[in-house]
Length: 46
Picture 1 (cartoon, rainbow, N blue to C red):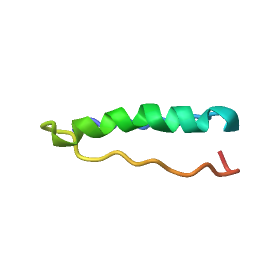
Picture 2: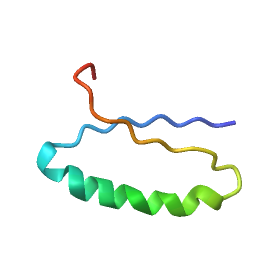
Picture 3: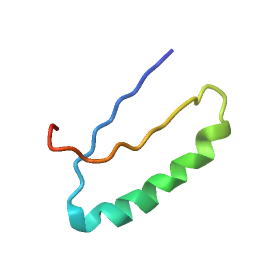
């Protein structure tokens, strides 16, 4: 099993565009071997 963890720091003014672009990944939900993707809200701890 391969686990890929990606952390992005997106400027506030670009978050809406970034979020819309990330929506295209939902098409992979039915792909064999693709189990999960989660968007986490920004925190000050990163």
